[in-house]
Image (cartoon, rainbow, N blue to C red):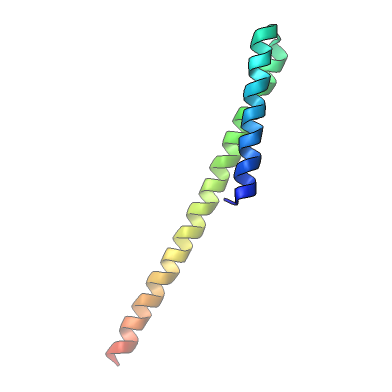
Length: 77
């Protein structure tokens, strides 16, 4: 996950927290719901980015392991 994505998601989460807090203080159920939705969306985006990061890391690790294995076979020749 890029730093920009993390910052954007964190800002969306903070904005959601603020909306929910204002909704609680003003007894505005619609604003509370919007805040919770913003927080949920930010969390979902974080989860997707984490899966992407995991897949990229797994791919890089698999490639490195394959290269190491090939190098081992080449040294035996």
